[in-house]
Image (tube, rainbow, N blue to C red; front, side):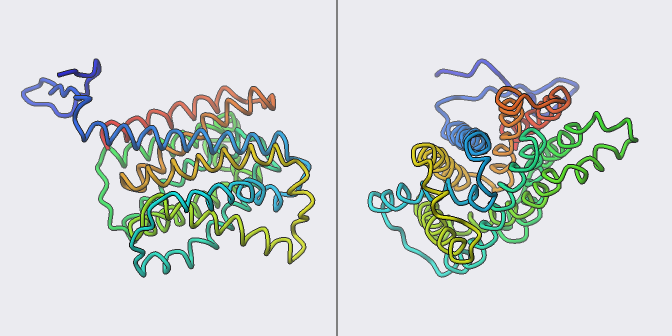
Length: 320
């Protein structure tokens, strides 16, 4: 039977580490790696979509920026509904939908407001705080139990968020924390992380009471239909700006569609806090995008911070 070439040290007995090899034919291992890579794919797509919009749609308002990816993803979601099995939909699905839809909408609008006004490498990494909020909302709403290793991993992610602004320690040890609120995009994204922490848990409630694919396609198909109509009606969005770059808009729609599918499949397999923590590795990709595409400065500490976040994410993936 084929074994992985790496091992984990899980406990100590009589002063000797206990070595445990992972069997790649073990269903538990397969499931663990499946949700991990799906979550990582969602992270990559989140960072890629943010970079895509900042690169090609910085000339539109944050309201319009928040609409574009989901407007173009909406047809894909609608078509997919015709090719998946419609599950039994329990009443809790609709109860969660009522509040998840507006919370998600507000989160997305603020998300794109943040990347519109601030460097990508100083905004998206602050979504790493989402698991802290999920830690509480997941326990409150889903009654999910988390291991000590999993919680340690989430704490490392938070420490990484502090290190992102470590160059601000010249203003004292609270400098990095103060820097969060001096950079408007960072402060806004911290609020977004709280909203996503709530909506992610509500999204899992929808998955549990239907199916991963149906919940994803229904929620975001509805979001991509209703939000543009409302924002156009109240004058916050001009429809001509949404359709002005159709090919680039379709590119954003495809990226976010892949993110939606990866996110919901992953969150159906594992505790919401773990999945969201891995997805917050989007911060790593955002730092790279910020450096390569937008020539953002201060990359050294941002890479250090995201590296710490990676260790925390790996801890969750291997031991959580």
